Image (cartoon, rainbow, N blue to C red; front, side):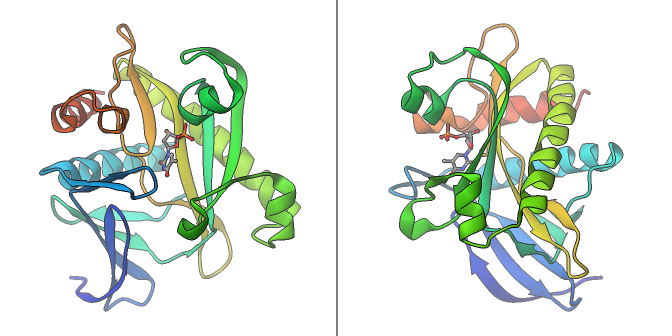
Length: 237
Ligand code: TMP
């Protein structure tokens, strides 16, 4: 039985602990919910539990489809064990349909199907509010080399295909999502972090109703029943 030890990091939505196993970390999903780079903050009872359950289900599905990632196992309602990685400081976004910051920045109507999946890089740096950067900035900052940039793009496009298929079975359209990747101690780059309605835009297949954190971002109602609906649908696939 793995034992939790000291707190290593407290993020906006998760706490990360060391364990008695060198290469295993312990994650606790929190109820804290933020928007606008942490300017808006609320405690939403039950959210941590829902995101832990949803992320665990999604990562298991990805594992079955041959996608390598950091997830080891869910150990309680709000906790999971993961492999220790050196996180690549990029938030990598893939967009299938225009929404959010893309719609705003480029004036593309929300809901417009993009002609191909668009991959974007954001620098993971709270002080700079996670700015949008391009491949050359990634090279300049020595975050990844060209080969790794191409590999990251290939991986997120493959994950997109699997996630589209998975959410389709739950009658959900995958609009866009954010991923993080990291390097295992022996080198390979694998998927990290979480995949939940906090990090994806998910719309009902028929009504286009938001089944994601936009409900909180845009004050559209109570987030908990919405996340419960996503979980309920994923449990049926
Ligand atoms: P955006 O349209 O606000 O740029 O967001 C694109 C996707 O990335 C959306 O599914 C939400 C997700 N995302 C995060 O997971 N974390 C973040 O900090 C931001 C800004 C977006």
